[in-house]
Image (cartoon, rainbow, N blue to C red; front, side, top):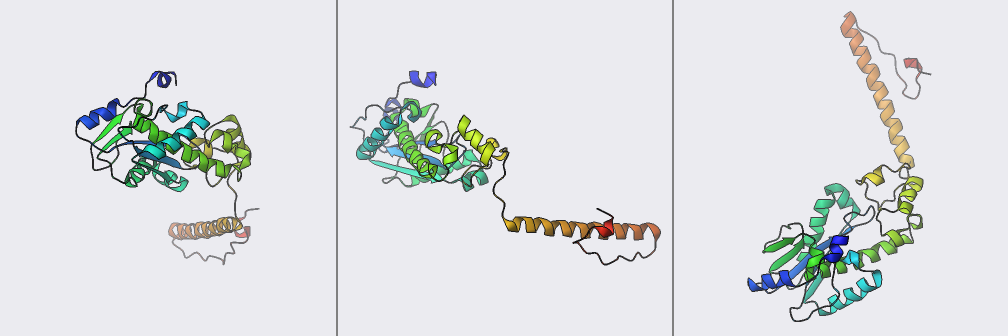
Length: 262
């Protein structure tokens, strides 16, 4: 964090792309990658070359009121901007890295006009135009910082809407990230349907998700099928060993008496 604070957010990378002939340069960034709860959200912004928005920097270094003011200024003066989210189900299905890339691609796809050059924070996106990948991009590129800010404001608003539904997890404060109160709630109440089940602090939570009646019925049916299968296999084994036909009694899976199990 100290390093990020020392970095200066400028238009230097944008100027290099302009010098190479690019006209519509989009900054792209994602937020929520390390959160335990809710979607990952990406922003894409094409800034006006002749208008400088003062105060742009990594969204993590800004307080909430400043982020919200800058987000409005960005939307007012940008040539184009877009936000896209990938939900928890997709995150658990494809993993957070690929879900983040998908959110970025969707945000880029919604830009109108379309960009002819991308500035992206650290990663490379499958997109048919030149791109520059910048380590700590949201701390050194104004366009990436702008994308980070609008994505952060949008995602925070999403999480705050869910905070009233799940008050035990203190989402309004931690925005779905790890915090002592959030981790304690996971241990005490278990995860909600909007927690990322593929993340270790979630699947290691002591309390399981709510079970439904049909789940117990399915377990009983599976157990009965396994018992019948075991008896059948034992009968076949005995027949193969003795060379004699072994008669199997009718077996009632609702009782364990035939197996001598109490």
